[in-house]
Amino acid sequence: MTATAVLLDIEGTTTSISFVFDVLFPYAANHVAEFLATRGEDAAVRQAADLVLKDAHDQERSLPRAEQILAIVRRQMAGDVKATGLKQLQGLIWKHGYETGAIKGHLYPDVAPCFATWRKQGRAIAIYSSGSVLAQQLIFRHSIAGDLTGSIAGYYDTTSGPKREPGSYATIAAAWKRDAATITFCTDQPGEAEAAAAAGMNAVVLMRPGNAPLPANVPFPVHADLTRL
Image (cartoon, rainbow, N blue to C red):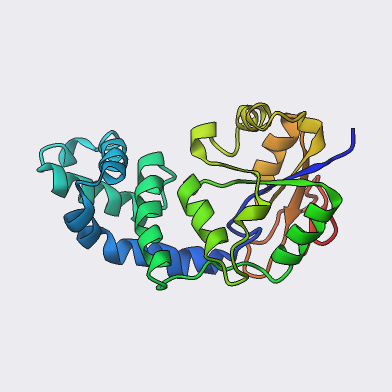
């Protein structure tokens, strides 16, 4: 079956790992206390905070709500935990940064041209990242290449499941209303590629500058960019 859709990871695939770790994560860490103090009663912030509280450790549960949230968030950020509540809260903080112009979403130079080519070819594009749907949309809406959200048909995050479990990719294919065999998943992580392949998708591994070295004999095509898809 011909692959007619492209499902993209972000970190290390469309966007440099250094942007995530050197720009986005520090921005959230530096602004989380102020953001919670000033925007903590917003409905979206409260919803994210409620999810964060579900991940509290015993020693954190005795703290007042505001201090508890901050303690959990700082612990999870320090450990790069892929928790849904944390990712939602980070996305809201980044939204403020993008909208004020403090942040511009990094994209590799081939991303915008590939999006344009795929659209002309009639190939649908979607995103699957451990970052929240909001965080994904922000990178592409406020990117250094302009607003690319018009090229993207859908966004999927950890609410679809962990990225190393085949069921997550089956869930995405069903939500996207596409046969898994028509989807090519692109990632920098062989473990994610294996999960996608187990769900019936095609898989490609990206080896971008700054990515971690790949193990020997990766059983998937390895590309330096997206132009060969």
